[in-house]
Image 1 (cartoon, rainbow, N blue to C red):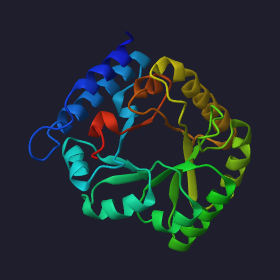
Image 2: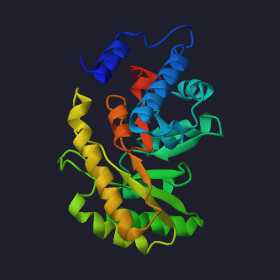
Image 3: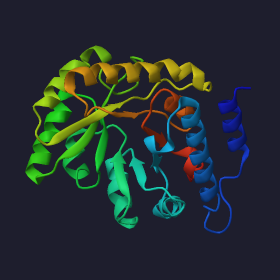
Image 4: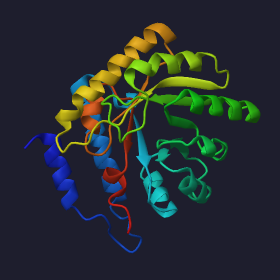
Length: 250
């Protein structure tokens, strides 16, 4: 059994909770994820400081977020603006929140005060709304462009062949800073099967950087089942939920 798959199988058999708070396993999980990030960096000749762990707290309550923060995590991701708007005010104010899910244009105004980065810009109209609202607030927002590398109809993201159009539009935005790219590859129980999609996103980033400049440096890719492969292919941000928080509460 491949190493990554074996580790995930072992994790799945471990208890999610321990003690009355229900989050006694959190510190162990966080440490284990950090160790796996460090090992993947060593294999790739990188340093763990090159990779930010984004703990995705979708479906988990504020007390779970607090436990993960106390275990040494600062960056958190949310998928839905509505959930984030209810949860973030109840969490420590020192946390840094990223919007990692699909962002609807009619939710932009509500999202901007909550998040420090948006990972999922996938169209020129969304970029235009973000620019207008950031201008209204006098705020500069770092963003990533979501690319649908696999061309899946069920996934959001700009097609690779349309990436140029989106980056050209971004060049005219005074209140958005495009820092890099994000993708969600097809799910597979074998992380090696998604490696080509991560490698392709890295290639797109290199190509884009040659035209649009050195500010394009971030690659947001890799989740609980495949983040080690993503790091080996150049990820600078990994979005990890289950491996940190355990299964979502019913």
